[in-house]
Length: 347
Ligand code: PHE
Image (cartoon, rainbow, N blue to C red; front, side):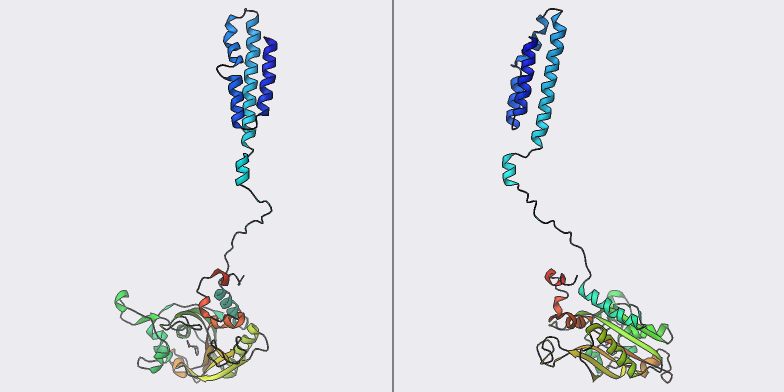
């Protein structure tokens, strides 16, 4: 019987280790440990053995049983770690596939260009400050020499805020330009002043390739004794050269803004048609990127500055136009279209 147990152990361990899948392993388990198994019979017969034989055979039989059980457990674990054939067939892993990069956030191209523009002015000694998008009529128009019945108010089609909805007694609006900050700054400080103000502006107008109803401006203001139009031109010319290179063409023309005198607008030659005239530049060959001028004496007087002593220049530029020129973008609507193919070109 001792020999039989040894043979059983050897046969069982062999068959268990040969099992190639869970079903084979289960058959082996039933065969060697099941109710009809030889080992089970031997264990049951122990009582019939002589008192001398019983402990010896009993010990051995139990050792064989434990060895078989341990072997089954080990084989099951190792079978589970190997995927089955059909899993291998359907679940193929291509280990040569390059990993997926996590997508990193990045700055919107308009944010990038606005920071770049502000930086150019910072290096010329300007400070950067911001102001409110929701403005009083007073700052947006009145204090900028645009009285209520002034025809120039038509230049800024305005989103008015329903006064009843916010219970104020003075008219409020979404600022149509960043110029109201000229007044806020001058009210609060004394010259010399040199600031740029980046911000969002709103106009109630039709959207096309070069206009959006929500857009950005960067306002510039410099006030001191002896500031001249030459300072205005020199500053803006330096700005253009820094952003576009030395041989970009610019053009100043007379323009009218009630809060400056004289007023100008400044254009850069159109990148799309190289000056020949196209849809983007409205056949003119030029793209207007800013309005500017010498701060009007009425405006200086209004904030308590003596126009005989102080003078200043101001400008308001459109960063989207600047970005379009710099990167050759021919439709302003790309900026807020949220198309990743567009946005991903600005790392
Ligand atoms: N605020 C003007 C506009 O929105 C631009 C401007 C700013 C013109 C400063 C002159 C001086 O069109």
